[in-house]
Length: 133
Length: 118
Image (tube, each protein chain N blue to C red):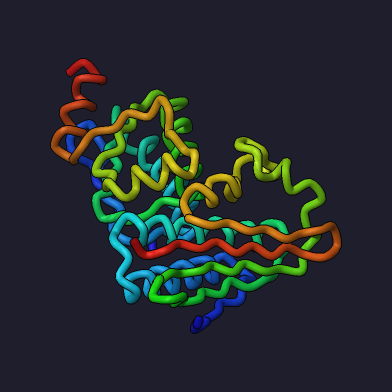
């Protein structure tokens, strides 16, 4: 079961809107202060990646309830240039923008589950999930 | 909205009270350097007590403004980093190495005076 709300990312203000949405949902689901900060930060990084690399995309926040397990999933999708070497971008310290926007490994560490699908010309789809403990 | 920068004796005091968007952060960078130049301040304390998350962009802007201030001969101390912010910054892989920090504003001002040898 999941309920979804989305923010379209086109400019810097949409990054603020996306993380505010995420923080509100995290609060509502009962996440503590530290997990709220983790979720907000992860959304901010993923939204910024869309803004920087794809120009346009979407951040959707899912409220999850799987067999009594409550969680929050961040879905970041874009139709940008895509990533040719996913293994490379998942290495700490790799950046094509000189340190702006986040390393995906950082986002992975902030969240419990992290899935990425991408190929050149096909855009990028990232799903990062945090479970309520 | 612009972040107010207050002069206190030979120091500048900044308390960031709301969530920073990109424009505000970049504007602050410029404003602080101009204020340093204008006032001849020797040190700066930036208090982050009210900030509940810092992403890599804000961290980069903060790190850059500290380096820029150092270039101008001014020391900067960051104060009031909340536990949740410290945890997420390190997990994200951002250490803010070589940055002077203190638990709160009071300790930050003390540290700054020590650094300035006053």
